[in-house]
Image (cartoon, rainbow, N blue to C red; front, top):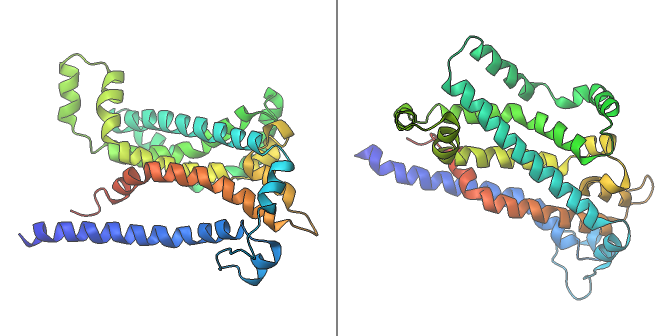
Length: 279
């Protein structure tokens, strides 16, 4: 009885802590947003103050719209992020299902091999990746970025999803097989709906690094027509002079899509993080 009564309280405490941590994490975002609507002097004089009639200015947003093709950069970032996340979730879930469902020689070794990608950063192979893209003619294409980000996100996706898929009832899957369902139908209609919290967690963990990455867009797709939002924003940062109004405005506009996607996935994300944490 005591355990049963304490479970709801523990869950409320867990969710309250997550909300508190979220608010703390969003404070820098709030600071960037309010400073994007200030003039240059107010940014440095009162960085934590809300803009008023004397400090309010839209010069940063006007500069962003006039200099560079901001909407093209935004479109490129959206295409790369959405397609990469789709491929990561699809292939990661399929690989996780195979590793967790089927027993074959080398199962454990293959799982460990995929997990190595979590420990070894993909940037170590930047030179080899660039040579491959040059040889295949994919330099200055969004395809190059999508392939790299998909490879970057798959190890974590397989690692997380395989653990969740092992918890799916074997009786449910065997019942589907008895009813004549194919393995693909069992995977898409029975297993995937049950691991949605885990998939949302994987999506959020991969979405932010992909959206904010500067390294691979600078190396693989620096052309004007393939620039991402993060790379396009660097035009306002100079060696000697930085247009802080434009930088903060560009960052504010870049943050909004991530916040919207985070809100969409937040409920499933919290369920995925807290699943199994409180018994």
